[in-house]
Each structure stands twice: as C-alpha cells, then as structure tokens.
Length: 277
Image (tube, rainbow, N blue to C red; front, side, top):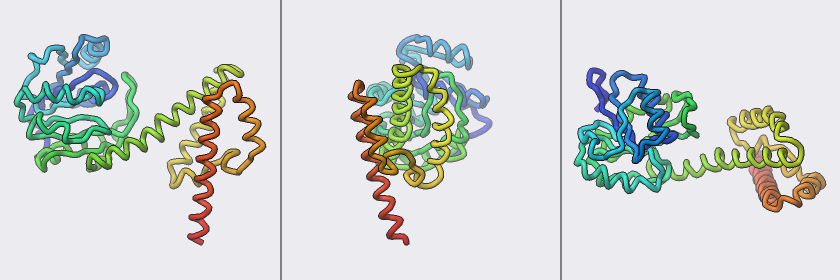
C-alpha cells in the first residue's frame, strides 16, 4: 500500500507542541494533505499553528473526523494512553501513529486495526525548522499494510527511514538522551559557571570548541578522540578544577563522576587496541 497522489489524505495531529509544529510544518508543503490539529485547549501554540499554516484547529473530540486517514499522536508519553482511549471510541480504520521513542507499539492496539510508530530521532523546538531529510525516522507497524503505508509517508520526511521494534527504539532513545540531553546539560552547567565566575558573555568563546568536539565525535568511536585532564590522567589539573568548584558541590560531584567515566573509557580503549595489535 502506498500514498496515492490523486487522493486527499486527511491527517489529524493530536497535540500542539514541538513535534506537532514540525510535522504540520512539513506536511503543509504537500497539497495532498488535509490537516486538522486538535488540542485540549485553545492554546497560543494552537492559534499560532492555525495562523501560520492555515490548518483547521479544534478543541472538541466530538468534532474529530473519524474517517481521517492518519492520526499522529504528538503529545507527551504520559498522555498517550488517555489519547488512545479517545481514539478507540471513534471506531476508525485509519492509521494511528505515535511519535514516542519509549512507548511500545502495543499501547495503540485498541485504537485501530492499523497502527504504527513514527519516531524521528532529533531534538525539536517549536517554530525552529529542521532539515527533515537529514533526520533519521524509525518506524514500526502492526501489519504489513500499515508498514508499507508508513514507509511511504516517512519517506516524504526523511531520506533515512529505518524499521525498528519497540525494544530497540527504547535503547536508541536512551542513547539519544545521553548524547543530546546530557551534553546540553553540560553546556548549561558551563554557561552557569561562567556567569557566576566571570561573565555569561564568555560562553561564546566555548562555541568553537563545542562545534569541533561534536564534529570529531561523529566519525567512529568518540572515546578515541577524547582529550582533557581525565583522558591524560592529569591529577594536578583535576585537583585545581575541584578546588574551584568547592562552592558548587553538585557540579563538583558531576566533575568527579564524568572524569572517572572518561578515565575508564580510556583504559578500555587501550586494552582493545592492545588486543588488536
């Protein structure tokens, strides 16, 4: 089953947050999609979606078109179960999708005969565009018909569409949190430290370092390009750093933990390289 170019495809977007904005933004470029966005309240974001993309917006589930072809659940993970209960009452034959990295496909089992997962691995911010073609999209479906349709749909977004089951998707989500969210938390910590000790304007001097580090990390094993006092076992420098952090115990604790992690990674890499030789 593939998307038919000569047929209007009715899409219901559930939610008006970050991922909803990006899906609406992208689908609105294609004339074949008839988009409706539903949110529990007439929020400022819902109003913005309506004005920016000229889509229909509703707040009442009684106004949902049960003959919609695709349902995108774009809410937080904690709301998916409640949304599924609402969809199940529609008796729809449409393809019901969620966009979560952590919620199993089985959560959708009572909503429709056609279910799937559309998980784009990227950080999304409302109103800030991304290059969809560069965003890997991981898909899963309850049957072959749904998978074929979802593959075609996902292909309109990304050049990298990967089939993945719920268990693997959860592991991938964890890795994404560590690589993305945790890294950003470190940037925020550095920003806060400079703001207290020097001036927040000094953070701009770290930007070239952040960019180069990220670029080096994407080629092969990131631990092999790790630098810094922990990587070279420079205890003297580490003691100086810890002394500077004595008034910030939480950041001091994190510094110690991350330094220990880097040291262990380096030792592991040395052992692997020795075996290879």
